[in-house]
Every structure is written in C-alpha cells, then in structure tokens.
Amino acid sequence: MRTRAGRENHPHGEAARLGRLLASASGYDVLSSEGRSLGQLEHVRYRLHTDHPDEIVIRRLRLLWKRRRVLPFSTVEAVDPRAGTVTLRPLRDSVERAPPA
Picture 1 (tube, rainbow, N blue to C red):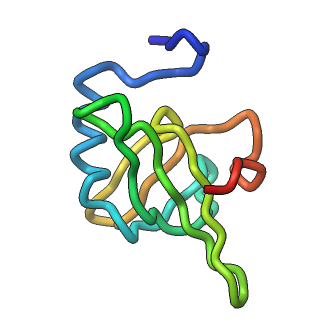
Picture 2 (spheres, rainbow, N blue to C red; picture 1 turned 60 degrees about the vertical axis):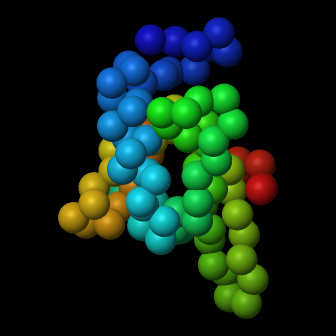
C-alpha cells in the first residue's frame, strides 16, 4: 500500500502489531536492513494515528554528545522483543542524513 506521499506503508493489521511492539521497545538497538547498528530507540511519536506511531526517534551516542534522528514509522521492517532490536527497511537515503530531532 502507498500513501499519498508515495511512501511504502504497512497494511493496517501489521501496522497495529508493530505499533504495539514499538510502544514497549524503548532502548532497543536499531539496525539497518544490512544489520548495522544505527543507535537505540529513544521513543516513538504519535500524532495522526492511534494504533501505531507516526515517527520513531533514534538516539546515537558519539563520544561525549548525543544525536537524535527522526524517521517515519514506514521505515520499520520488524521489531524483535527477544533480541531487543528494531530493524529498518532499506532506505534510499542514508539514515545518517535523516533530519535531526
């Protein structure tokens, strides 16, 4: 399914399932589709939807300072509570270039 902006979107049931998992995933490691660590999930933001977040906020620690990146919910591929990971879909633009929070 595609949104008006042309981004991939989760089917409704899958979005609700991922939303429930993300609600308790604060501190999980966030991984790229290739398995590279991108940081930790700091929190999720609900603005337009009640069954799933609209955005996820990733915290990256670099030496003595923290950086946050905000990504749309549509970038989430999977949440694994046993492993404590959130895996993202392949992105056209690098997550490192995502706008800061």
